Length: 615
Image (cartoon, rainbow, N blue to C red):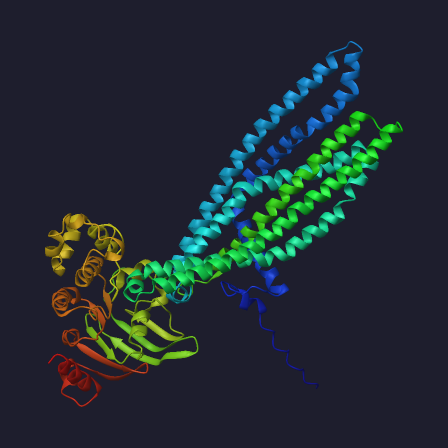
């Protein structure tokens, strides 16, 4: 019996390396990659336009009628010259009257239908942009922390502003011109051939040259407009980072260097934009030149036929008017192509962001957990960033209601453990469970209600203190907000502010001290009332008076709930029920603070070092 050879291994999917935002920054893409990105962009545009199919078909019908009314003008002029004028010279004015009335009716129909088309297309365009903005914003919010750590906020802002505006320009101005121009070119091409076949063939002889010019522009402009989108994104990133860290910029006198960087990025953007404008500056005059040359040839050939009696003067005039209208839309198409290439590059970037997977996605059929007790279990958890493994295999059980302090050197894996507990990441192997339910099986609402993380930054949003506290529970009443602040110990300083709870904290809470911001964030967490509270170095940046104030608040905040605290301060460790010492992603010590302090392990050494630093 002959052995059957095993099938060859399937080739890896090359498109996987092009998915999402992987190709951003690549100026020269392979043909396959370019086709993949264009197909992805077309799919996105199709999805955006799909809900408006009925309106688009209606607009198409309006455009056809408007185009017919617009095309009637040159034909009626020819009829007037060849029929109405001779009749008028013979004493019969009625043919001229009817031609005049027909021209007035055609002009009115053209104007009315044009109004209807512009109004309808504008509404569809704005509806598409509204859907796109909301879709991008909603999707970016749902993407995991890993995406936001590598994809800067400046790039996200660029996607939602300059890229969407490029598409808006296309929908608001270019698309209208394109549809009108295409119908005009097609219909006029047919009219030219019907009006006079020999002249029509002469006119269409210019098309091969137009096609060659268009292909040249298309090949070069794809790269040019992709480059402009990348350079403007880099400019926005630098701008955002500069003013987001303006305190550090001014503290280290980086204004001059940042200004130099901004100037360099501006130059790069200008060069990229100059290249795009150079292409359009060559393309548009080339189309115009070809059109004018064709008109000259047609005029000469038509004049010879008129002299020979083979062509009526009115027919030649009509033909020339149609021919002029034939090439004018071609210039509109050329200008549209300029907007199209810019919008196409923008749509390519937007579709890439939308293709990024939500790797920490909600389960399709989540397990309900309306009232969590707070038991947290890490079962064989392995996790790393890229090729670096941070947690090689973690097994840990934290009973409900227990306060655990994580200590260890920088890079030991403390913050990673905290982020896994809050499900900012999913483990690569193993499970993290809350009350026996894996976190990736919980509904987002249940998970976020049960687990709250308070970070060292204590981020506050622009708005009132009451607004920032209610962020933990938007449905909370003013009385509940004030009660939460009073329980934490923040009511006193809030009441002393000019507008009390309605005081605007300004950008990032800049009106408050570090300790006050931390108290507001604690009040926010207290109001949310989670079963599990994760504190990531929440007191490490505070001075001694502020720390004492925050420590008192912690006693209230941690009561009757599970808590995981990343501790860099001795005072924080002392309020814990249990201390976990981490090293290289592993638990090397585990016990009560008093028990470990009396030993000879790493925590005892850390405790002595902390105690010595306070002397």
